[in-house]
Image 1 (tube, helix red, strand yellow):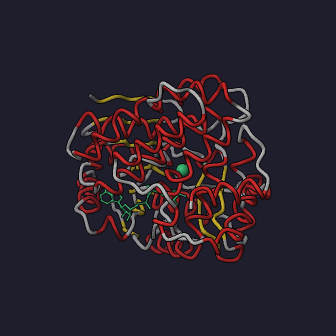
Image 2 (cartoon, protein in one colour):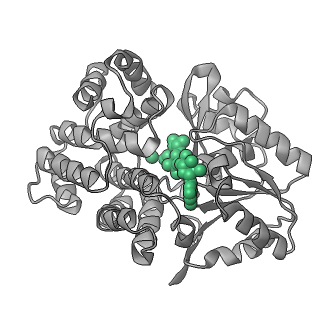
Length: 379
Ligand SMILES: NC(=O)c1ccc[n+]([C@@H]2O[C@H](COP(=O)([O-])OP(=O)(O)OC[C@H]3O[C@@H](n4cnc5c(N)ncnc54)[C@H](O)[C@@H]3O)[C@@H](O)[C@H]2O)c1
Ligand SMILES: [Fe+2]
């Protein structure tokens, strides 16, 4: 199966579409791409394969792979320097959310020179992203963040000591090349964690405040696809249908969260920046607690998603239990203490969760004491 969509951006989807990458770069006017990836992926044959596809297509790429999980502003500056040094004219961002977001932030950095925190979406930084942005093609190798079709990049910024969302409609990649085959070698644990991120995007989008029936429809099917395919993809990474289903669920998740996210992501962001928990695992652990919390103010919305999560009991408790069962089935821990979080971290986690913008779309208002209780319940 191969497909072409132009919603929410140009998407090439299906096994083998990676072979069309060079043609897509040419069509954007690119000749000298900066291939942004991360050090983990450099241990696989994927960056080499992509570089060959670009070269065989008559392009002159240079590589930049100094990107860590949860990329930093320092790495973005180094990437922008590599872009200038190569006299690059476009970016091919390859990897999970970390290199895709690093690629988008490098895109900003080329012609935007203020300190990075000035572009923080929470401070209205989107209005400052006005200069030229080199074109970017996103090639996901995890099925999780959906950054390939999102208008944001999440970067850890040292000066403010937290993960900052950079947002602009202009950050939507010009093209997303979604080839599920690039995820076949993803280890089971990363498949499970990133897959729970995809589920959380669909779930939070559906529950979030606001009127967006189109996003709701995508989110609901995205939940079903993630729940159906994730256990299979974790058990057998070579399962073509499951890998394809998860990659589509991830792309649908970020398409749906144009509507908004919610408290799960506000809790998850500091769990990564303060306690080093991976983004997907942080979402997975907080999800059951957030469902119980949200069911108190949005019981109807939670009742809608419970069957999609696999629960006949449509209460918050039923939905939470379904998520816990899924986590156990895919081998993920369900408690923060199992992920290195201690009670003494909760005040700082709470402060940072309140500063995060995602919870402003949550169906239930979140006060500092709510954030603290949710962290404590998950310990
Ligand atoms: N921009 C957005 O809209 C958005 C949305 C959600 C999350 N995020 C951000 O995305 C980041 C997380 O991204 P992620 O969960 O995809 O993880 P990641 O990009 O950090 O990758 C996790 C690990 O998987 C490895 N990896 C990736 N693909 C692989 C493959 N095919 N084979 C083997 N190893 C592979 C990487 O090297 C890395 O070690 C966080 O910083 C998060 O805040 C962004
Ligand atoms: Fe996420």
